[in-house]
Image (cartoon, rainbow, N blue to C red):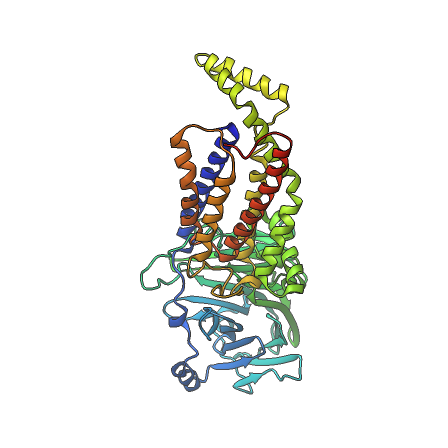
Length: 538
Protein backbone atom coordinates (compact mmCIF):
# COMPACT_ATOMS: atom_id res chain seq x y z
CA UNK A 1 0.00 0.00 0.00
CA UNK A 2 1.32 3.42 -0.94
CA UNK A 3 1.68 6.32 1.46
CA UNK A 4 -1.13 8.00 -0.45
CA UNK A 5 -3.49 5.08 0.18
CA UNK A 6 -2.55 5.00 3.86
CA UNK A 7 -3.34 8.68 4.15
CA UNK A 8 -6.69 8.16 2.45
CA UNK A 9 -7.58 5.38 4.91
CA UNK A 10 -6.42 7.51 7.83
CA UNK A 11 -8.48 10.52 6.72
CA UNK A 12 -11.49 8.28 6.06
CA UNK A 13 -11.32 6.76 9.54
CA UNK A 14 -10.75 10.19 11.07
CA UNK A 15 -13.79 11.49 9.21
CA UNK A 16 -15.97 8.62 10.44
CA UNK A 17 -14.90 9.14 14.05
CA UNK A 18 -15.62 12.86 13.65
CA UNK A 19 -19.15 12.00 12.60
CA UNK A 20 -19.59 9.64 15.56
CA UNK A 21 -18.22 12.14 18.08
CA UNK A 22 -20.33 15.05 16.85
CA UNK A 23 -23.41 12.86 16.63
CA UNK A 24 -23.24 11.63 20.22
CA UNK A 25 -22.08 15.02 21.54
CA UNK A 26 -25.08 16.85 20.12
CA UNK A 27 -27.43 13.99 20.94
CA UNK A 28 -27.45 15.29 24.52
CA UNK A 29 -28.81 18.61 23.26
CA UNK A 30 -31.42 17.31 20.87
CA UNK A 31 -32.36 14.13 22.77
CA UNK A 32 -35.96 13.53 21.73
CA UNK A 33 -38.28 15.08 19.23
CA UNK A 34 -41.39 16.85 20.35
CA UNK A 35 -44.54 14.79 20.08
CA UNK A 36 -46.27 17.36 17.89
CA UNK A 37 -49.39 15.27 17.48
CA UNK A 38 -49.99 15.42 21.24
CA UNK A 39 -49.16 19.10 21.37
CA UNK A 40 -51.43 20.01 18.48
CA UNK A 41 -54.20 21.94 20.22
CA UNK A 42 -56.38 23.07 17.37
CA UNK A 43 -58.53 19.98 17.64
CA UNK A 44 -62.28 20.34 17.96
CA UNK A 45 -62.08 19.84 21.71
CA UNK A 46 -59.49 22.60 22.00
CA UNK A 47 -61.60 24.96 19.89
CA UNK A 48 -64.60 24.33 22.13
CA UNK A 49 -62.49 24.95 25.19
CA UNK A 50 -61.22 28.25 23.78
CA UNK A 51 -64.72 29.37 22.94
CA UNK A 52 -65.78 28.82 26.55
CA UNK A 53 -63.02 31.09 27.80
CA UNK A 54 -63.42 34.79 27.17
CA UNK A 55 -59.71 35.48 27.67
CA UNK A 56 -58.61 34.64 24.13
CA UNK A 57 -58.92 36.21 20.72
CA UNK A 58 -57.99 34.51 17.47
CA UNK A 59 -56.04 36.03 14.58
CA UNK A 60 -55.52 34.45 11.18
CA UNK A 61 -53.42 35.62 8.26
CA UNK A 62 -52.29 33.80 5.13
CA UNK A 63 -49.27 32.37 6.99
CA UNK A 64 -50.11 32.51 10.71
CA UNK A 65 -52.82 31.35 13.07
CA UNK A 66 -52.46 33.07 16.45
CA UNK A 67 -54.14 32.96 19.85
CA UNK A 68 -53.72 36.04 22.03
CA UNK A 69 -54.24 35.63 25.76
CA UNK A 70 -56.11 38.69 27.03
CA UNK A 71 -54.75 38.03 30.52
CA UNK A 72 -51.51 39.93 29.91
CA UNK A 73 -52.18 40.60 26.24
CA UNK A 74 -49.52 38.18 25.00
CA UNK A 75 -49.41 35.80 22.07
CA UNK A 76 -50.03 32.35 23.50
CA UNK A 77 -50.08 30.02 20.48
CA UNK A 78 -48.70 30.36 16.97
CA UNK A 79 -49.30 27.92 14.12
CA UNK A 80 -47.33 28.22 10.87
CA UNK A 81 -50.00 27.43 8.29
CA UNK A 82 -47.69 26.77 5.34
CA UNK A 83 -45.36 24.37 7.17
CA UNK A 84 -46.44 20.88 8.17
CA UNK A 85 -45.22 19.35 11.40
CA UNK A 86 -44.53 16.10 9.54
CA UNK A 87 -44.28 15.39 5.85
CA UNK A 88 -47.17 12.91 5.97
CA UNK A 89 -49.35 15.18 8.12
CA UNK A 90 -51.74 18.03 7.32
CA UNK A 91 -51.23 19.66 10.71
CA UNK A 92 -49.25 22.90 10.71
CA UNK A 93 -46.19 23.50 12.87
CA UNK A 94 -47.25 24.54 16.37
CA UNK A 95 -44.32 26.82 17.17
CA UNK A 96 -45.39 28.81 20.22
CA UNK A 97 -47.41 26.82 22.72
CA UNK A 98 -48.23 26.64 26.40
CA UNK A 99 -49.40 23.36 27.94
CA UNK A 100 -48.40 20.85 30.59
CA UNK A 101 -45.87 19.12 28.32
CA UNK A 102 -44.05 22.10 26.87
CA UNK A 103 -43.95 25.88 27.18
CA UNK A 104 -42.68 28.28 24.53
CA UNK A 105 -44.00 31.83 24.62
CA UNK A 106 -43.15 35.42 23.76
CA UNK A 107 -44.22 38.04 26.31
CA UNK A 108 -44.04 41.81 26.31
CA UNK A 109 -45.27 44.38 28.80
CA UNK A 110 -44.85 47.86 30.25
CA UNK A 111 -44.01 47.87 33.94
CA UNK A 112 -44.63 50.85 36.21
CA UNK A 113 -41.60 50.65 38.49
CA UNK A 114 -42.90 53.57 40.56
CA UNK A 115 -46.11 51.77 41.55
CA UNK A 116 -45.42 48.05 41.60
CA UNK A 117 -48.35 47.05 43.81
CA UNK A 118 -51.08 48.39 41.55
CA UNK A 119 -49.92 48.50 37.96
CA UNK A 120 -47.76 45.39 37.64
CA UNK A 121 -50.35 42.76 38.27
CA UNK A 122 -51.34 40.70 35.25
CA UNK A 123 -53.39 43.06 33.12
CA UNK A 124 -56.72 41.84 31.74
CA UNK A 125 -57.00 43.40 28.30
CA UNK A 126 -60.18 43.84 26.30
CA UNK A 127 -60.84 43.63 22.59
CA UNK A 128 -63.79 44.70 20.43
CA UNK A 129 -63.75 41.41 18.52
CA UNK A 130 -63.00 37.76 19.20
CA UNK A 131 -61.80 36.89 15.72
CA UNK A 132 -59.57 38.80 13.33
CA UNK A 133 -58.92 37.57 9.79
CA UNK A 134 -56.66 39.21 7.23
CA UNK A 135 -58.73 39.96 4.15
CA UNK A 136 -57.25 38.53 0.96
CA UNK A 137 -57.55 41.92 -0.69
CA UNK A 138 -55.67 43.72 2.09
CA UNK A 139 -52.00 43.69 3.09
CA UNK A 140 -52.32 44.64 6.76
CA UNK A 141 -54.38 43.63 9.77
CA UNK A 142 -54.53 45.67 12.99
CA UNK A 143 -55.47 43.96 16.26
CA UNK A 144 -55.90 46.52 19.11
CA UNK A 145 -56.41 45.53 22.75
CA UNK A 146 -56.69 47.80 25.79
CA UNK A 147 -56.41 47.80 29.58
CA UNK A 148 -57.23 50.63 32.02
CA UNK A 149 -55.60 50.46 35.46
CA UNK A 150 -57.44 51.43 38.70
CA UNK A 151 -55.60 54.76 38.76
CA UNK A 152 -56.65 55.64 35.21
CA UNK A 153 -53.52 54.75 33.26
CA UNK A 154 -54.40 53.40 29.81
CA UNK A 155 -52.31 50.55 28.39
CA UNK A 156 -52.86 49.69 24.77
CA UNK A 157 -51.29 47.08 22.54
CA UNK A 158 -51.69 47.10 18.79
CA UNK A 159 -50.54 44.03 16.85
CA UNK A 160 -49.79 44.70 13.20
CA UNK A 161 -49.91 41.61 10.98
CA UNK A 162 -48.83 41.82 7.36
CA UNK A 163 -49.59 39.62 4.39
CA UNK A 164 -47.05 36.85 3.81
CA UNK A 165 -44.97 38.05 6.76
CA UNK A 166 -43.82 36.32 9.93
CA UNK A 167 -42.76 39.57 11.59
CA UNK A 168 -45.48 40.96 13.87
CA UNK A 169 -45.10 44.58 14.85
CA UNK A 170 -46.19 45.11 18.46
CA UNK A 171 -46.85 48.73 19.47
CA UNK A 172 -47.28 49.47 23.18
CA UNK A 173 -48.99 52.73 24.11
CA UNK A 174 -49.19 54.11 27.64
CA UNK A 175 -51.33 57.14 28.39
CA UNK A 176 -50.75 58.55 31.87
CA UNK A 177 -54.08 60.08 32.89
CA UNK A 178 -53.18 59.98 36.56
CA UNK A 179 -52.15 63.02 38.61
CA UNK A 180 -48.58 61.84 39.14
CA UNK A 181 -45.57 61.16 36.98
CA UNK A 182 -44.79 57.50 36.44
CA UNK A 183 -41.54 55.68 35.77
CA UNK A 184 -41.89 52.81 33.32
CA UNK A 185 -39.77 50.21 31.60
CA UNK A 186 -40.61 48.13 28.57
CA UNK A 187 -39.90 44.38 28.74
CA UNK A 188 -39.85 41.71 26.08
CA UNK A 189 -38.80 38.12 26.67
CA UNK A 190 -38.88 34.63 25.24
CA UNK A 191 -39.55 31.73 27.61
CA UNK A 192 -39.08 28.06 26.82
CA UNK A 193 -39.01 24.74 28.65
CA UNK A 194 -35.46 23.65 29.40
CA UNK A 195 -36.07 20.11 28.10
CA UNK A 196 -38.08 18.84 25.18
CA UNK A 197 -40.92 16.42 25.97
CA UNK A 198 -40.14 12.74 25.45
CA UNK A 199 -41.77 10.98 22.54
CA UNK A 200 -42.79 7.47 23.58
CA UNK A 201 -39.64 7.33 25.71
CA UNK A 202 -37.59 6.51 22.62
CA UNK A 203 -34.29 8.13 21.73
CA UNK A 204 -33.53 9.44 18.29
CA UNK A 205 -32.38 6.71 15.95
CA UNK A 206 -30.38 8.91 13.60
CA UNK A 207 -27.16 10.84 13.76
CA UNK A 208 -27.19 14.61 13.96
CA UNK A 209 -24.18 16.75 13.19
CA UNK A 210 -25.78 20.12 13.47
CA UNK A 211 -29.06 21.00 15.16
CA UNK A 212 -28.79 23.89 17.59
CA UNK A 213 -31.58 24.52 20.08
CA UNK A 214 -30.97 27.47 22.33
CA UNK A 215 -30.85 31.25 22.62
CA UNK A 216 -28.94 33.85 20.62
CA UNK A 217 -28.56 37.61 20.51
CA UNK A 218 -27.15 40.49 18.49
CA UNK A 219 -25.69 43.70 19.96
CA UNK A 220 -23.73 46.77 18.91
CA UNK A 221 -20.47 44.91 19.44
CA UNK A 222 -21.47 41.40 18.39
CA UNK A 223 -23.43 40.72 15.21
CA UNK A 224 -24.44 37.21 16.24
CA UNK A 225 -23.77 35.20 19.37
CA UNK A 226 -25.22 31.92 20.54
CA UNK A 227 -26.13 31.60 24.20
CA UNK A 228 -27.11 28.03 24.98
CA UNK A 229 -29.53 26.94 27.67
CA UNK A 230 -26.55 25.63 29.62
CA UNK A 231 -24.96 29.08 29.38
CA UNK A 232 -28.15 30.59 30.79
CA UNK A 233 -28.19 27.99 33.55
CA UNK A 234 -24.61 28.72 34.61
CA UNK A 235 -24.31 32.44 33.96
CA UNK A 236 -27.14 34.89 33.42
CA UNK A 237 -26.65 37.28 30.51
CA UNK A 238 -26.48 41.03 31.13
CA UNK A 239 -25.45 43.27 28.22
CA UNK A 240 -26.32 46.89 27.41
CA UNK A 241 -26.80 47.84 23.76
CA UNK A 242 -28.54 50.43 21.60
CA UNK A 243 -29.39 48.02 18.80
CA UNK A 244 -29.88 44.32 18.28
CA UNK A 245 -32.28 41.51 19.07
CA UNK A 246 -32.74 38.43 21.24
CA UNK A 247 -33.93 35.06 19.93
CA UNK A 248 -34.75 31.43 20.61
CA UNK A 249 -33.56 29.07 17.88
CA UNK A 250 -34.26 25.53 16.80
CA UNK A 251 -33.82 23.60 13.59
CA UNK A 252 -35.42 25.55 10.71
CA UNK A 253 -37.45 27.92 12.96
CA UNK A 254 -36.82 30.93 15.18
CA UNK A 255 -38.55 33.44 17.45
CA UNK A 256 -36.97 36.85 18.01
CA UNK A 257 -37.80 40.12 19.76
CA UNK A 258 -36.45 43.24 18.06
CA UNK A 259 -36.83 46.45 20.14
CA UNK A 260 -37.09 49.47 17.85
CA UNK A 261 -37.14 52.44 20.23
CA UNK A 262 -34.04 54.62 20.43
CA UNK A 263 -32.05 54.40 23.63
CA UNK A 264 -30.22 51.75 25.60
CA UNK A 265 -31.67 48.31 26.23
CA UNK A 266 -30.40 45.63 28.57
CA UNK A 267 -30.33 42.06 27.28
CA UNK A 268 -30.69 39.51 30.07
CA UNK A 269 -31.41 35.85 30.68
CA UNK A 270 -32.84 33.79 33.52
CA UNK A 271 -32.97 30.16 34.62
CA UNK A 272 -36.10 28.94 36.43
CA UNK A 273 -35.63 25.90 38.67
CA UNK A 274 -34.65 23.34 36.01
CA UNK A 275 -37.95 23.83 34.16
CA UNK A 276 -37.65 26.97 32.05
CA UNK A 277 -35.14 29.40 30.62
CA UNK A 278 -35.70 32.86 29.21
CA UNK A 279 -33.85 35.52 27.30
CA UNK A 280 -35.20 39.03 27.15
CA UNK A 281 -34.61 42.77 26.99
CA UNK A 282 -35.68 45.75 29.08
CA UNK A 283 -35.55 49.40 28.17
CA UNK A 284 -34.04 52.16 30.23
CA UNK A 285 -36.42 53.98 32.58
CA UNK A 286 -38.84 56.37 30.91
CA UNK A 287 -40.50 59.15 32.94
CA UNK A 288 -44.04 59.95 31.77
CA UNK A 289 -45.52 63.15 33.28
CA UNK A 290 -49.27 63.45 34.07
CA UNK A 291 -51.53 63.80 31.02
CA UNK A 292 -48.72 62.54 28.77
CA UNK A 293 -48.25 59.44 26.70
CA UNK A 294 -45.44 57.32 25.31
CA UNK A 295 -45.07 54.67 22.62
CA UNK A 296 -42.84 51.58 22.61
CA UNK A 297 -42.30 49.87 19.26
CA UNK A 298 -40.99 46.34 18.76
CA UNK A 299 -41.19 43.46 16.32
CA UNK A 300 -41.67 39.79 16.97
CA UNK A 301 -40.38 37.37 14.37
CA UNK A 302 -42.06 34.01 14.80
CA UNK A 303 -41.63 31.58 11.96
CA UNK A 304 -39.26 29.81 9.56
CA UNK A 305 -35.69 30.97 9.12
CA UNK A 306 -36.11 32.54 5.68
CA UNK A 307 -32.85 34.41 5.28
CA UNK A 308 -33.99 37.18 2.91
CA UNK A 309 -37.04 38.10 4.98
CA UNK A 310 -35.16 37.92 8.28
CA UNK A 311 -32.48 40.20 6.90
CA UNK A 312 -35.18 42.72 5.97
CA UNK A 313 -36.71 42.49 9.45
CA UNK A 314 -33.53 43.24 11.43
CA UNK A 315 -29.80 43.52 10.75
CA UNK A 316 -27.98 40.18 11.14
CA UNK A 317 -31.17 38.28 12.03
CA UNK A 318 -30.49 36.08 9.00
CA UNK A 319 -27.36 34.80 10.78
CA UNK A 320 -29.67 32.66 12.92
CA UNK A 321 -29.58 30.28 9.95
CA UNK A 322 -26.51 28.76 11.49
CA UNK A 323 -24.18 26.86 9.16
CA UNK A 324 -21.66 26.18 11.90
CA UNK A 325 -17.92 26.65 11.57
CA UNK A 326 -18.06 26.08 7.80
CA UNK A 327 -20.50 28.94 7.18
CA UNK A 328 -18.10 30.58 4.69
CA UNK A 329 -18.49 27.52 2.44
CA UNK A 330 -22.12 26.69 3.26
CA UNK A 331 -23.46 30.15 2.41
CA UNK A 332 -22.07 30.21 -1.17
CA UNK A 333 -23.26 26.61 -1.67
CA UNK A 334 -26.78 27.54 -0.55
CA UNK A 335 -26.85 30.64 -2.76
CA UNK A 336 -25.70 28.62 -5.76
CA UNK A 337 -28.24 25.87 -4.97
CA UNK A 338 -30.99 28.46 -4.74
CA UNK A 339 -29.91 30.06 -8.02
CA UNK A 340 -29.97 26.70 -9.82
CA UNK A 341 -33.27 25.71 -8.22
CA UNK A 342 -34.85 28.91 -9.54
CA UNK A 343 -34.48 27.47 -13.06
CA UNK A 344 -34.89 23.71 -12.53
CA UNK A 345 -37.47 23.91 -9.70
CA UNK A 346 -36.21 20.75 -8.01
CA UNK A 347 -33.72 20.76 -5.14
CA UNK A 348 -32.55 17.23 -5.99
CA UNK A 349 -31.65 18.26 -9.54
CA UNK A 350 -29.99 21.35 -8.08
CA UNK A 351 -27.79 19.12 -5.88
CA UNK A 352 -26.84 17.03 -8.92
CA UNK A 353 -25.93 20.12 -10.95
CA UNK A 354 -23.93 21.72 -8.14
CA UNK A 355 -22.03 18.43 -7.75
CA UNK A 356 -21.16 18.55 -11.45
CA UNK A 357 -19.98 22.15 -11.09
CA UNK A 358 -17.82 21.34 -8.06
CA UNK A 359 -16.22 18.32 -9.71
CA UNK A 360 -15.54 20.21 -12.95
CA UNK A 361 -13.81 22.96 -10.98
CA UNK A 362 -11.80 20.34 -9.09
CA UNK A 363 -10.84 18.36 -12.21
CA UNK A 364 -7.27 19.74 -12.44
CA UNK A 365 -6.66 18.64 -8.85
CA UNK A 366 -8.23 15.24 -9.55
CA UNK A 367 -6.04 14.76 -12.58
CA UNK A 368 -2.98 15.73 -10.58
CA UNK A 369 -4.02 13.19 -7.93
CA UNK A 370 -4.11 10.28 -10.39
CA UNK A 371 -0.86 11.30 -12.06
CA UNK A 372 0.78 11.43 -8.65
CA UNK A 373 -0.57 7.94 -7.89
CA UNK A 374 0.80 6.70 -11.23
CA UNK A 375 4.28 8.03 -10.48
CA UNK A 376 4.22 6.45 -7.02
CA UNK A 377 3.24 3.14 -8.60
CA UNK A 378 6.25 3.35 -10.96
CA UNK A 379 8.51 4.12 -7.99
CA UNK A 380 7.10 1.25 -5.95
CA UNK A 381 10.00 -1.19 -6.66
CA UNK A 382 12.53 1.47 -5.65
CA UNK A 383 10.55 2.23 -2.49
CA UNK A 384 10.55 -1.47 -1.57
CA UNK A 385 14.30 -1.63 -2.17
CA UNK A 386 14.94 1.40 0.12
CA UNK A 387 12.71 -0.02 2.86
CA UNK A 388 14.47 -3.37 2.70
CA UNK A 389 17.95 -1.85 2.57
CA UNK A 390 17.38 0.46 5.55
CA UNK A 391 14.89 -1.63 7.50
CA UNK A 392 17.02 -1.28 10.64
CA UNK A 393 17.47 2.48 10.27
CA UNK A 394 14.06 4.18 10.03
CA UNK A 395 15.51 7.68 9.98
CA UNK A 396 17.80 6.89 7.05
CA UNK A 397 14.92 5.10 5.33
CA UNK A 398 12.72 8.21 5.57
CA UNK A 399 15.51 10.45 4.29
CA UNK A 400 16.13 8.21 1.26
CA UNK A 401 12.40 8.06 0.41
CA UNK A 402 12.11 11.85 0.63
CA UNK A 403 15.17 12.26 -1.59
CA UNK A 404 13.63 9.85 -4.13
CA UNK A 405 10.37 11.80 -4.15
CA UNK A 406 12.25 15.07 -4.70
CA UNK A 407 14.37 13.58 -7.46
CA UNK A 408 11.34 12.22 -9.32
CA UNK A 409 9.24 15.34 -8.50
CA UNK A 410 6.50 13.35 -6.79
CA UNK A 411 4.22 14.72 -4.07
CA UNK A 412 3.18 11.78 -1.85
CA UNK A 413 0.31 13.85 -0.46
CA UNK A 414 -1.01 14.75 -3.89
CA UNK A 415 -3.48 11.87 -3.77
CA UNK A 416 -4.99 13.14 -0.52
CA UNK A 417 -5.38 16.80 -1.39
CA UNK A 418 -8.61 16.47 -3.46
CA UNK A 419 -10.13 14.35 -0.66
CA UNK A 420 -9.18 16.95 1.94
CA UNK A 421 -10.90 19.62 -0.16
CA UNK A 422 -14.05 17.51 -0.62
CA UNK A 423 -14.54 16.90 3.10
CA UNK A 424 -15.43 20.56 3.96
CA UNK A 425 -17.74 20.67 0.92
CA UNK A 426 -19.40 17.46 2.09
CA UNK A 427 -19.93 18.80 5.62
CA UNK A 428 -21.05 22.21 4.34
CA UNK A 429 -23.73 20.61 2.21
CA UNK A 430 -24.86 18.68 5.29
CA UNK A 431 -25.22 21.95 7.19
CA UNK A 432 -27.19 23.45 4.29
CA UNK A 433 -29.57 20.48 4.20
CA UNK A 434 -30.09 20.46 7.96
CA UNK A 435 -30.43 24.24 8.43
CA UNK A 436 -32.09 25.74 5.34
CA UNK A 437 -35.87 25.83 5.63
CA UNK A 438 -36.14 25.84 1.83
CA UNK A 439 -34.90 22.24 1.72
CA UNK A 440 -37.12 20.99 4.55
CA UNK A 441 -39.64 18.46 3.17
CA UNK A 442 -38.38 19.13 -0.38
CA UNK A 443 -39.06 16.09 -2.61
CA UNK A 444 -36.92 14.62 -5.37
CA UNK A 445 -38.41 11.80 -7.43
CA UNK A 446 -39.97 8.40 -6.82
CA UNK A 447 -39.61 7.36 -3.18
CA UNK A 448 -37.55 10.36 -2.03
CA UNK A 449 -40.12 12.69 -0.44
CA UNK A 450 -37.72 14.70 1.74
CA UNK A 451 -34.13 15.47 0.74
CA UNK A 452 -33.40 16.76 4.26
CA UNK A 453 -34.27 13.38 5.80
CA UNK A 454 -32.87 9.87 5.37
CA UNK A 455 -33.84 7.62 2.48
CA UNK A 456 -36.89 5.70 3.82
CA UNK A 457 -36.01 2.61 1.72
CA UNK A 458 -32.20 2.91 2.16
CA UNK A 459 -31.71 2.47 -1.59
CA UNK A 460 -29.46 5.49 -2.08
CA UNK A 461 -26.94 4.52 0.68
CA UNK A 462 -26.65 0.99 -0.75
CA UNK A 463 -26.15 2.34 -4.28
CA UNK A 464 -23.56 4.77 -2.91
CA UNK A 465 -21.67 1.83 -1.37
CA UNK A 466 -21.74 0.01 -4.70
CA UNK A 467 -20.21 3.01 -6.45
CA UNK A 468 -17.44 3.11 -3.82
CA UNK A 469 -16.81 -0.62 -4.32
CA UNK A 470 -16.60 -0.15 -8.10
CA UNK A 471 -14.14 2.74 -7.68
CA UNK A 472 -11.93 0.45 -5.58
CA UNK A 473 -12.09 -2.23 -8.25
CA UNK A 474 -10.96 0.05 -11.07
CA UNK A 475 -8.33 1.81 -8.97
CA UNK A 476 -4.83 0.27 -9.11
CA UNK A 477 -3.27 -1.03 -5.94
CA UNK A 478 0.44 -1.36 -5.20
CA UNK A 479 -0.12 -3.23 -1.97
CA UNK A 480 0.55 -6.94 -1.61
CA UNK A 481 -0.68 -7.04 1.98
CA UNK A 482 -3.91 -9.08 2.04
CA UNK A 483 -5.06 -7.64 5.38
CA UNK A 484 -4.82 -4.11 4.00
CA UNK A 485 -6.82 -5.14 0.94
CA UNK A 486 -9.55 -6.58 3.17
CA UNK A 487 -9.72 -3.32 5.11
CA UNK A 488 -10.18 -1.44 1.86
CA UNK A 489 -12.93 -3.87 0.83
CA UNK A 490 -14.88 -3.23 4.02
CA UNK A 491 -14.69 0.58 3.68
CA UNK A 492 -17.83 0.79 1.42
CA UNK A 493 -19.79 -1.30 3.94
CA UNK A 494 -18.78 1.06 6.76
CA UNK A 495 -19.84 4.04 4.69
CA UNK A 496 -23.18 2.42 3.84
CA UNK A 497 -23.87 1.97 7.55
CA UNK A 498 -23.26 5.62 8.40
CA UNK A 499 -25.01 6.96 5.31
CA UNK A 500 -28.21 5.12 6.23
CA UNK A 501 -29.11 8.02 8.54
CA UNK A 502 -27.74 10.91 6.50
CA UNK A 503 -30.07 13.23 4.57
CA UNK A 504 -30.92 11.67 1.23
CA UNK A 505 -29.82 14.89 -0.50
CA UNK A 506 -26.32 14.41 0.92
CA UNK A 507 -26.22 10.78 -0.20
CA UNK A 508 -27.37 11.90 -3.64
CA UNK A 509 -24.44 14.33 -3.75
CA UNK A 510 -22.00 11.56 -2.85
CA UNK A 511 -23.45 9.16 -5.45
CA UNK A 512 -23.17 11.71 -8.25
CA UNK A 513 -19.65 12.59 -7.09
CA UNK A 514 -18.67 8.90 -7.19
CA UNK A 515 -20.15 8.43 -10.66
CA UNK A 516 -18.17 11.43 -11.89
CA UNK A 517 -15.06 9.94 -10.24
CA UNK A 518 -15.57 6.69 -12.16
CA UNK A 519 -15.84 8.57 -15.46
CA UNK A 520 -12.85 10.77 -14.69
CA UNK A 521 -10.75 7.79 -13.60
CA UNK A 522 -11.54 5.95 -16.81
CA UNK A 523 -10.55 8.94 -18.96
CA UNK A 524 -7.37 9.78 -17.01
CA UNK A 525 -6.18 6.14 -16.70
CA UNK A 526 -6.70 5.54 -20.41
CA UNK A 527 -4.58 8.59 -21.22
CA UNK A 528 -1.88 7.39 -18.81
CA UNK A 529 -1.89 3.97 -20.48
CA UNK A 530 -1.35 5.64 -23.84
CA UNK A 531 1.76 7.25 -22.37
CA UNK A 532 3.07 3.79 -21.48
CA UNK A 533 2.45 3.89 -17.75
CA UNK A 534 0.26 0.72 -17.83
CA UNK A 535 -1.84 2.11 -15.04
CA UNK A 536 -4.66 -0.41 -15.47
CA UNK A 537 -2.42 -3.38 -14.82
CA UNK A 538 -2.38 -4.61 -11.24
